[in-house]
Length: 104
Image 1: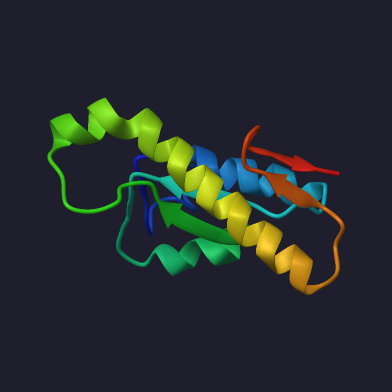
Image 2: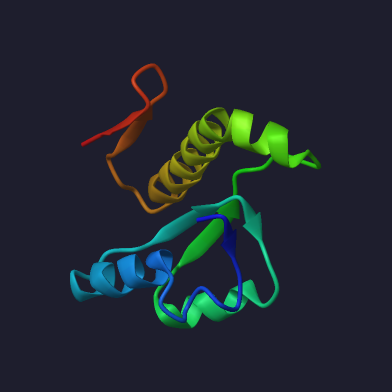
């Protein structure tokens, strides 16, 4: 998503994905270019967490050019955070940084 904001719960794709995921009792983390006004409204639509992929101030051209790299880095960071949380509750799942996969 380009921006997670107060309009996201009104039918944008992340909110619809969250709605479907909740029917299967699955958590949802939304990754977006930016986090906008009243983004916390999304917690009520089923999005459990969200994060911006953009690491800092940039131009639109750079954001478009580097989006894939930033998305990958943000996704890895989110998985690492989840893995840390899981280890705190005693889960046996581990993150394999070389394959960028969670081992079951």
